[in-house]
Amino acid sequence: MSLIQASRRASQLLWHLNRHMGSSSSAATSPPDDIQLNPVELLGPESQRRCMEKMRSLPAFPRPKSLTPSRREKQTSAVLIALCQDRGTKEISLLYTRRSRHLRSHSFQISFPGGRRDDQDTSFVDCALRETEEEIGLPRHRIQVWGEASQLNLPRTSSIVPVVGVVPDFSISELCLNTEEVEEAFSVPLQSLMVPKATRHTQFRSGYSGPVFVVDHHRIWGITGYLTHLFLHSLLPPRQLPNCLKTNIKFIRPFKLPPKPPHHREHHGTDPSMRT
Image (cartoon, rainbow, N blue to C red; front, top):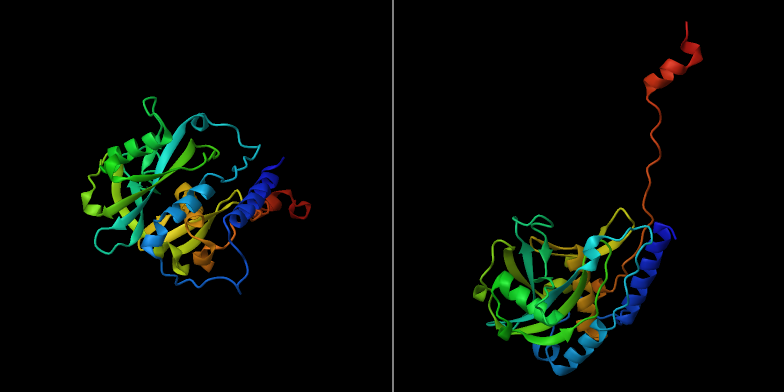
């Protein structure tokens, strides 16, 4: 199978994923983009059940056969998707970090707290909580764990298991950053991720389109943008999913430039009419 065919399969899968998450393309039945969230309802047991049911049944990401396996794919990692309820406003936010400038790969990029699973980790939950405490100083007893999502196997990187949890009475000031791993930590209100001006996409050369969220000066893209997209579709009930999050993730055939014509001087040297 060619890369283009594999990419088309990925497009079809992601289209079915949006349907699986309860999205719809009907503008007549779509809710407005200025939905107000109820924190009590959002963090309630019914929301937890619905969210984790969807996060545990994510379809597999198709791998293009043209991509050779990488050693990184044998590794496993866990990340924490933390729903933080602000101490003062009670607003619900997602917690992100920006990777340190000292890291050899993906420095300054935005990610969820987490990292590679070690031998001493008893589970992916244990891994996500340990890495979170090491990176940003948020102790595990502050996190009310909802559970593990299904494992995501992505090309050219370690497999990832998202762990979902709630941090009540949260203040960003309580964090203590490990500057060797984390440049900054910040929270983004869910409401800010649900408006049209924040939802965008990135078109990669391979033909894949990936979801992007831009809030203030923060640009959340790549795997983190993809996970944010999946999580919002899992957390929000269909009636609260705004139109701007219902756009399908599409595949666009890569544009190929035509071959460059020979230089004029090359023609000049081979044109018989120019010979003396």
